[in-house]
Image (cartoon, rainbow, N blue to C red; front, side, top):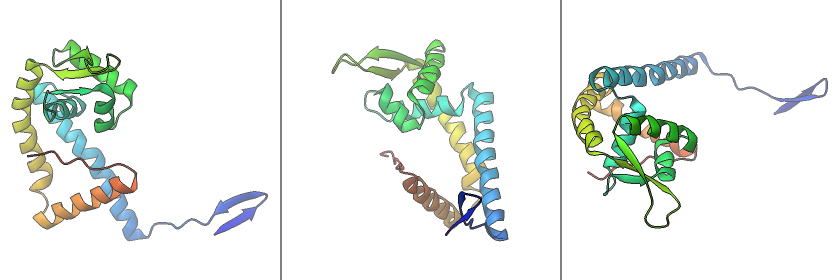
Length: 167
């Protein structure tokens, strides 16, 4: 319902209940802490950021270990300019290279290097253990399933989709 005061139109706010506030703030805190802890552990163990790791994983899931930059930006949920800066840094570290798409000669491909593949293989084991230690093993299987289902529902409501890689 809208109300008007001194010429302004405002919506009636549906404030969060106390219990909703508790859940909301817990989620915000977890959403901040989990990536921070996982990222710190990846950085300390392997010199990778979570963004580096995500890019390497996305590239590893493609048949040729390469993706168009535009597709990689879409999959990693970052802007093309931000991805360009990230890939620049990864290219200087020898983890990826870029080359012109042979299909049309217009787009650029991000291609995982052998060094990137080797680092990903080493980091993946530690990262999976970290995810287990900080999330999977903290929750019951039912809670973890509910978290995944609720997260997928939020992603869908926000107009995206959850990509499930082929095993």
